[in-house]
Amino acid sequence: MLKKQNQLYELLNENNSLNEIQDYIRKIITIRGFSEQRVQDKMLLLLEETGELAKAIRKTLPEASIDYEKIENYTDIEEEIADVFIVLVSICNRLNINLYNALKKKEEKKLEQQRQNEASFKKSVDTFRKNTAKKAAQKISSRLGISTEQADEVEAILSDEINTNS
Image (cartoon, rainbow, N blue to C red; front, side, top):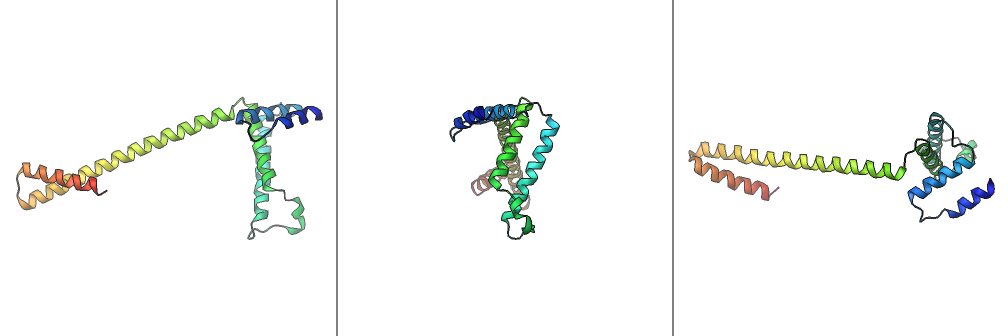
């Protein structure tokens, strides 16, 4: 068992893809006997590891109140982030979720949402500009008593100025 874990560990390097890392964690969790653990149990473990991460972060904050008599119980942030990541990936593995694909899908959704928000905002701004030019032209035309044709010219000039200066 230890020999197989060492062999797998030796294959890990900074050039591994997310899919390769997820596969590594799947194999290690299987070797260690945790691959059949219920998702609920893994979720509780994730919460526990997240709590340990929070505790490790608190240790680095000078304003945090920590029990210095138990300081040796506080672990490194890096180690706790790794634990959180391993448990999260093992949950993905248990649910047959490819983390890379899930990440890509989520980011595509967020980008599309951003595109829609920007398009909606641009449309709102364009409508505001158009309405502002129209209302200003109507007020000017009414006060000056000019013709509809001249009012249309005033609106076009105002619209150009609004669009140029905003």
